[in-house]
Amino acid sequence: MKRLISLFISALYIYNMYAQEKLIILNEGLWQSDNGRLSYFEDGTIVSNQWFQDKNGSKLGDTPNDIIQATENLIAIAVNWSNIVQFIRPDGTAVAATEDIPNNRCLCSDGRYVYVSSYGHECMTIHGAYPFTKGFVAKIDLSSFKVVAACEVGYEPEGIALYDGRLFVANTGGYGEQEGDHDYETTVSVVNAATMTVEKTIDTGVPNLFGKMSQSGQYLCINSPGDYYDTPPCGLILDCQKALASDDCFVRFEYPATYSTATIDGNFLVIGSAFSYLMGEYAFSCLTVNPREVMESRGERGLTHTMPGTVGSDFAAMNQPYGIYVNPYSGYIYGTDAGSFEGAGYLYQWSPDGQQLGKYRVYINPGHFLAIMPDDYAQSIHALGQSPALTDSAVYDLQGRRIWERMQPRRGQTYIKNGKKILRVR
Image (tube, rainbow, N blue to C red; front, side, top):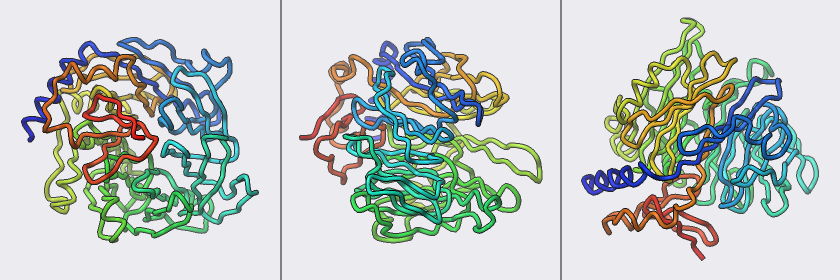
């Protein structure tokens, strides 16, 4: 089976040497400077470093924090300090903006609703304003772009992912010192997406679950930077399937997962950025994580300090690594360097086997990515001549998240089967 997967990836690489690469890079800009931007990359060229403004004649907003594919023809962007969720088409044109979610952070979607984590303490919905002591998750109806429900979770929630009708929300508690009434959170809230109620709270024992988490089917890769003093950073693999029945559903590993991405074979590529106020410096690490092996071995196997080709060494040579991403349509790998955090950053591109293909100047603090479907994508399956052994399991949703054999595709949604073919379930 491993040999078949290897042959498949090799065939995918040969085909995609000539494939169309379309990528949106979300540049955060400088906080409170209202200079967040989109860069648009296509086939080895930065087409624009102010793509949203080019398309719409207006600014994107202040400190955008996340970008996802909400439906086949709709992209959602969390613009944190502008307190809006901006919706655009894949061609960059604006569709709508939802303004009722203050201090929004991370996003996920089921194709009908977009779910947004927020540090805020009040959310305006179609049913009126809801006050919260802690943070919350808001639910936006994509037919109206209105907030139809909200649910309190932990303090300062960050990463959010959807699995089997539940939202998994990582809580940080990162405002504890500022607000003075709580400590760091150690929990993941499990929310029923239909009813918007908390079904359970998983205590990981690990503080400050900060940043966007990545998802590969039933597995989540979650970061903990620690407390920046005495509690060291670490990473977590959480099994959503196990979490539905048991709290014994996660494994801790000793390296942070500051930036991570799912690969087309179901693993995670992980860049760790550990900062200590005691030492006053950053320490970086690079990992490839097999989540199934990590869970089965309780962390004894499944982690390697290697990445494809020169990806790991190229990240080690960067000034400030700031993001990593695998294009789920092609397997190409991307990473960013924020440099000084105040000037233009850089986008790096690697082939699926880790050969560096280019370095491109983008904008300030380029931290988030979204691949756009290539024009000839639906036909490209025929060029590969894949083995039938792979056709039963390799199914991905539009956000590049792998759906394993036990999961049933949902009606009305579009899926990527075998890494290439578009499958619409009716």
